[in-house]
Length: 438
Image (cartoon, rainbow, N blue to C red; front, side):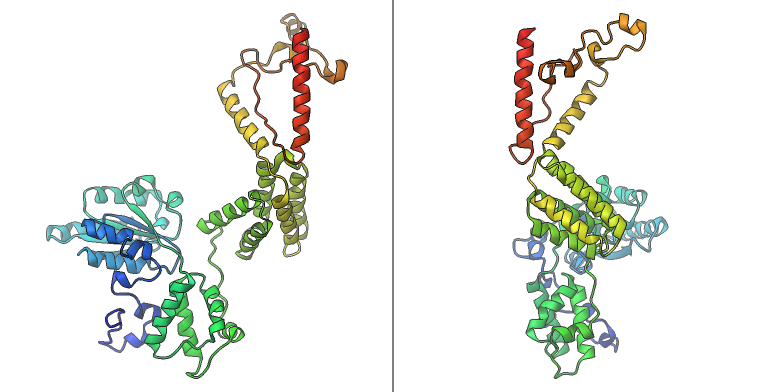
């Protein structure tokens, strides 16, 4: 373990540094939890072997080692390491860095610029990187917790490779806790069964679990061993990572929607609960449930839309926390309802036709003739009032005469749509009979 961490104590400052900083790996091979990047067959390992790393975007949750990895990449590739935070930097700061980098290049030193929270830069600021990346002035490593597809310019993404860092698992968190115990020269002061509680508090964040471990060491005697309840008393619960305006929001709403579509009420209720617990606007969830009712259930269960709307109204009337139960009820109802996207598919097909044939007039026989001139022009001529026809069905063509009859809506053989399919088949037979009679 010698040389694994930065534990030098040339001054008295080392003991005052946070444990997470003292245990920062000094070699890429010692990074925990990112073996898909740093292992023998990892992406970064292959890039190092090729002799060129290039500009990178490191995308991953907090506490997965993005900053550490950037520093070690710079050292591995013999680059000068320059660091900026997009939160505290502006265009003037970028210009100064670019000028210093060009001067450094004249002395034969290449620069790797690390920009933390790069998604915080606006579009114009992101564009300022493009010329210095293209001419080789800098090699950029950007770090972001947000989905680069949403937050970064396409031009910037086209010039950098995105590497995804994974949230820590219990196995990798255990490795970090073992390293903490070695650094502190004493076992972690909790009972084995309390580790799962500590993992839940850390929520996959390596920095967080080391910070929590450090608090435990400070708050306990060497002989003390806390159970789960004792652990909760010593440590304040850390809220789950969930930014309702960013990537966590998109991931969880996608998981909720797909769980409903996949008819898994338990998974759907889990993701609904996670979003509510994370502070999501319940009315937003109500609107999404309405969307699911129309997109994934439709006329297979016409009541689904009413249940979703009623749940939204119930929450609007009751508020939190009582109204959240109505959302849970709707979520379970939708997940257990028969599924059909026939309405959704029919609407998209009809919209496509509307865009293609949007200039065509309806046939004149179905248009009213409120003036004498319009009557003379044939408006309304030949229209058959369906209620006056046998079985209240005329079988006339209602599409523009320049279009063939279309068939957008194809009901499925599930739920109420099975009955609708029978009606459509019945009308199709009548339509054919009327056509043959004509």
